[in-house]
Length: 464
Image (tube, rainbow, N blue to C red; front, side):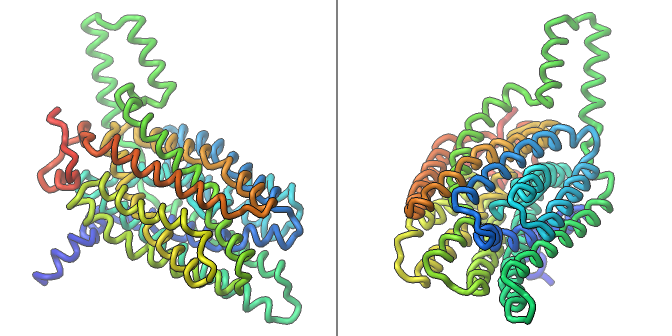
């Protein structure tokens, strides 16, 4: 028992347990969603290729789908704290079910494009829709500075495992159905989208039973109202203050101080997202299929093992952040992954390509939990949903050009250039992040104890 307690604490399971049932439900919701995204990422580009759609049109589809995600994320994250986070997440799940059903039944390119743009379908295998920003903001609301990184680590870890199982199952289901009489490859792809639809229904269920604790706390609103009354009583309120307050309300209460920090981070994340859009998992599997022509189950195995390794590595992100800091964890786990992207097109054999895929995907997500914890640590609690929503929006917007560029390169027989450019952009993001954020002050807007302060590593908490 004496050995079990420190193990639970170091692994972050103790933090997850103390956070409560809502944390488990949010993690379950994202895990099942990433299960669906992993399955769709394996087959999406292959599905369109089987329909006879050109590479340029496949790239256009992914670009326009990401643009649809931008608009949907902007709308839902800006209203989530007003209409309720749980209602917003539930509505997003309904859109996911609608899109999955359309892909399961339809083969018309333009109808599918409309369903993807107006609904929720993962064009890249990543979580670019409206869910993630709201969920991360909710996790930040449920946790303290000392438990936040641990809970976010498990949020990311279980998502990776969900993707792993989803891709593995998709590859196996396709090969199994193809071997049965009366089934075509196209029919097997449709079956995967029925699985996607079922996962959307599961998301609806988990979001429906979240508790009131997930909503924005009213304390911040009460404090603002108290300050308002005091200014009125003291006769100090003027038109300039009113105009400033309206402006802050319009920008979802994001302060100038927060914007000055986030503007730099948003730019760097946009650079990273341009790279991710160029070589998404859907396009990566399509590239491997074109270059080596492996069985679909083999592709599924490759992605599944990569995502499983990612899940295992994510477990260490929390303890690593405690010892070397959030920024160092983000940078030094991401650099090897970026290098793997740059080198990805050069091996001539499938096994060495797979090795680089393992390195890329295995370490790629170790920066996600520290990044969410970093954002939560530098913004005010009432700003988190808006800031995280804008973060997702800008990252998605930055990634929209990538698929179209890659599609054009693929049409010209220069698919490999996309990986080289993407790897170089990712490395530029890593170096920029280290340079600009290594000395940033954290947790200026919330109380922090000694144990919680350990998460900052080299970064020092402000004395303010």
